[in-house]
Image (tube, rainbow, N blue to C red; front, top):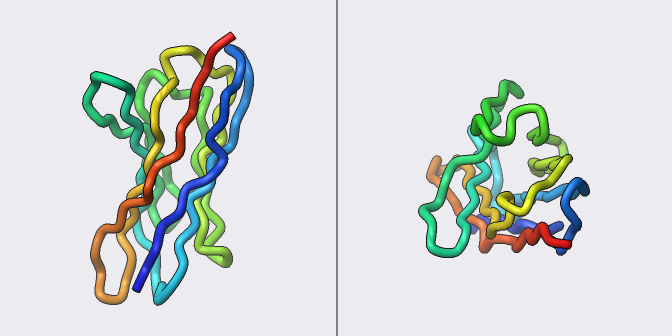
Length: 117
């Protein structure tokens, strides 16, 4: 059985920084694409960042230049480093990863990020 666990969510002031972690545990053979999503109250879940197993990354336009997604394959962990945070970044952040074997998508439980003064 595989579990994905996010951590690192917190209350931070505008302009601050925060780093989220998404760790896979259990019967993990390979981790392929990993995505970070977020969902703010009353809004649809949106894709924030994606990182392939080779390390290539894509980002939501509104976070480009502020967020960086990285992976540590040895630790089965993906990180989302967030800088210059804005109130509109407030949301529950979820990770979603394609993990084998057998290959299927897993979701974490989410971690709350609140940007407020």
